[in-house]
Length: 370
Image (cartoon, rainbow, N blue to C red; front, side, top):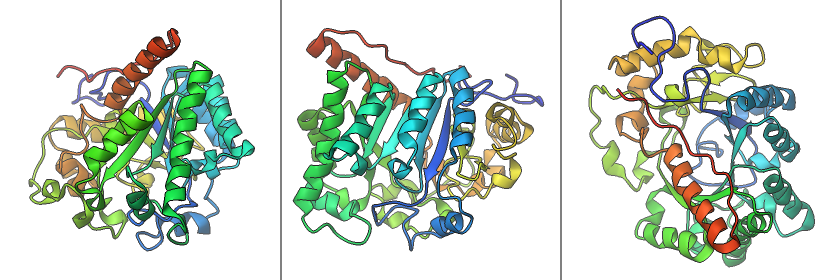
């Protein structure tokens, strides 16, 4: 559609009427104390903000409303946020409802709530049985020592790093085993943030997860400081060179406003995932009052899209100060859509080679030709 008119401005096939993905901040409390998490106490005041407003959990009525919309368009609901989504007491039920409506669901989790006890394992089993599309285990390491440092329990280091590590790895293995037993095409992936502590260990970690454990893909995410949302330093990045010399202007549009929309526990909308404190929420209607489709097609989002498509994104706030966009991290070709392609191919192969069954695997749309 024309980037110069007053209606929609779209650069990704499939996002013309509705976002390809709705990113939901499910919860703000967490049972981990990851030192480089933007929500960890000392790195930001974000958790305090939601606690003071009694907004620590995503409300189920709002989830159900969004699930129905996402189901209509076959869009993704990505369960993430400032804490561990599986601590939400209704998370399993909510995902089951979303799947019954036809939505696609991507769960980001530290995996701790899928432990070996029967109640925890049953949560995992119910999710896979419901047909959850993708479970992303945030691991950030390929060995016990590193994992204990980057992903410690809230309150301090684990008493036994090896036991802590084996417990979490066991939960990933359990997910892989369950999806084969049920012959369901749930993607199981692991993510690793490219932070300085993993320098010299990254290739080994990737091999461990792909070859030893057998996950469908390993996502290596660039380290982010989240700009003025946190006090995190980019010096902790494994790729410091990316942030060394930012250009003063940037013509290539950012991918975020063309495919994803962020909603927090209060129903507020953010322009993009970089704005984790939802400082741009005052520019958009609240999702408790207005459907996602209407917000997505509204003038505020379309103004940002037109500016970016016309090479003027750097004139916008907060885009002009976005370290991720200027460093080239918000990439059109190597983000979540690539993960879906790679992991989907692997699931299909595993199911055919090991079980002799065909499973339906969603493959993503591509960017519109310029």
